[in-house]
Length: 289
Image (cartoon, rainbow, N blue to C red; front, side):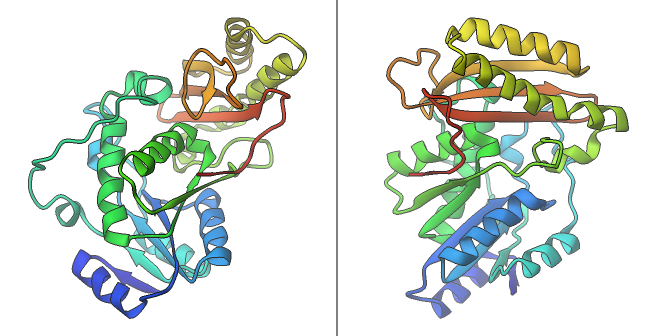
């Protein structure tokens, strides 16, 4: 595995691997099984696997945890190598943003609901850094996890609107044995918070059960899920929403897929989770665009 820290180094390596298909896994590091599952899928499907680790300041708000975001570069390098990564791209902020940007990027749709409601500018930062990384890496396929399903929907728009010649592979959420979605932020949960956090996924399954049972009122389902969470968790509920997917509209209409999504703020960790299913209630675990 080659570890590179500059765009120039990366370009030199890319020349050496011309005509090879590239699978790209962009991350913010502190790698866990969700990330490694993407690496393993990419390893099976592509000639060259590239992973980037970059904690992007543009997607953090003024009161968010950029400085405290977990980082462990040596551990991440070991994990990447173990999972068959060919190139690990580790740029610093000055490499990605050497000067103040003259071009401002913003997304108009799919970014006014769920996580974006209370995180203004978050997805503008996401599409900015991904545009840079896509142009640097020039992958054939980009791999993301459906745990961040809104991000997947936003990336799908970015690729389509800007005509990137990239396929998007959205892979299943990786969970702990009790159902909690794997996340870099789980390390910030207290023992009692961690014990109850399994109920976030149970709440999503309950909401899906209501839908399958014939109660397809969006307001009723979200209300019932909120009640479930209030009984079984102590975190502050940020949102519970049932929307079309990937358009993320409140009116389901004839949409093929739906997403039931939750965000809960604990004392030091904000956890998100979701479940995507079709109108028959069948869970959708993998999506390609």
